[in-house]
Length: 208
Length: 400
Image 1 (tube, rainbow over the protein chains, first blue to last red):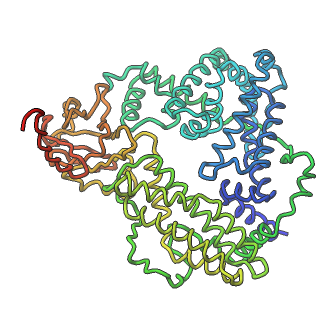
Image 2: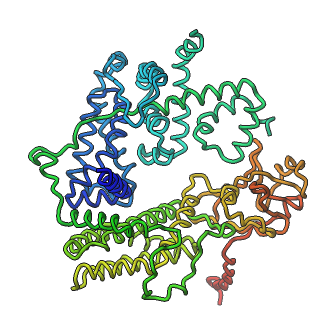
Image 3: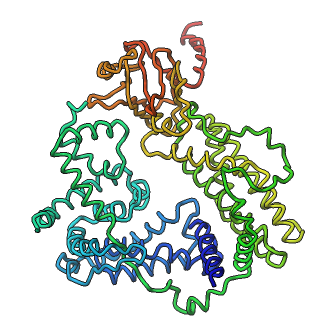
């Protein structure tokens, strides 16, 4: 049993060494295992990005499914000369923008701050320590509120850079602007963030 | 330098400082200011805390299965892999069990696999394991992109070749088809060709090992197509391909070229300081000039220095701010950055005994030995085009 598990773990590690781009070549051949591997690599990252971007967890789930359907139906749309990660984030972003355009009249700050609409479920591997979990929970409400108060351009850069950890250059490719613009938008978004969080942070400081 | 560095400027750099994206000069000035200003220190500490927390916010997760179009059936039912895929999996598993394949496939290390006979005398090719930073040329980021994809694609191909090359006869046919497909779809050959064309056309010359690498990749891709199309047993074809792959110096090149691609792709112009801070440290004997070639597609090159000294006296560095070279390019900016900005005009040599560069304790230093704007000249990299003799003036009309 132990040996079997060890072997399986090694097999996973081996599979994990294949680049996204090679997996996409396999998807284009109709390899559903490669498709599933890509799905598991990216589903949570894309969901987090889209949910933060559109401010609606359920819609984000549907949009992420739509991203992968596109990928499955037309893998040739991906040019293997590009990085898969930036490409798939670009697809997700475009779908999110379309969604926001459709929903624009109905999207209000009040809706997005409704409890439960943007809910957080920590990943197993990222489960925070109990003390952090409380802090994250407190932060979550504020985070959603501030995020949805930002313009779309600032929000997408903030989510991709400050939350997802993508580099300026990667985000520049995804949103289609120079890296310098990404840098300045990120700085502006962070400034806004601090301003909005000021009362909250003060409250935390003064708390006994 | 801190004279020019007020709190407002420091605050404007918080975001990039947090992301580690300050230039060397900015970092020095920023750190100096924050360490000397209690307000900024406290503000930045808070900034750091808040956005570290934001960065650590957990991700959303979904349990939904991977979607398939309506009518495609359930994912599991539809996911019986093709013979090719199964072959590749078995090949990969075989490689694991036998401890060959991936263990043997370690780029940039001493190979543990017995070198097979080489089809071409590889020893004749120039092999450099580390880029010579004295000879750093600064091509377009496009070239860096090609290089990076080339390195990555070569790794991927090697991974497949090594794993599938151990497949038993029964599975080898599927493995051959898989690799054939990957080779056909991958941009490896195209990237190698483009890199070579850039080299020949606009960049004048890359370092020799990049050129050699691109040529080898082109050959490998061509060889793969030929070998895979042979009417031999699949296992034999796979063995041939693996041998072809191993017979090349690709693996030796890959690690150093990845580093070089990093340098090429660095968003602001890479500085010698950053390059020189690596393990190689070859910059300390650059007396006599700094060699800089700017790629044809760049608008300007910007070098960041960690220190500028005048006549060996570090206290005179402020003097050097006003120092101008050649055609009015400045070392140092009014804000105190140690920068040399070179508008692109096809590439320059800075080659003069009046400027010297060296590395001291990991810091890259430009040492100016003689003051004065006329003491340093920039010369085009290419030899000047001989002047075309003026055509004789046409005879004026009306006169014989």
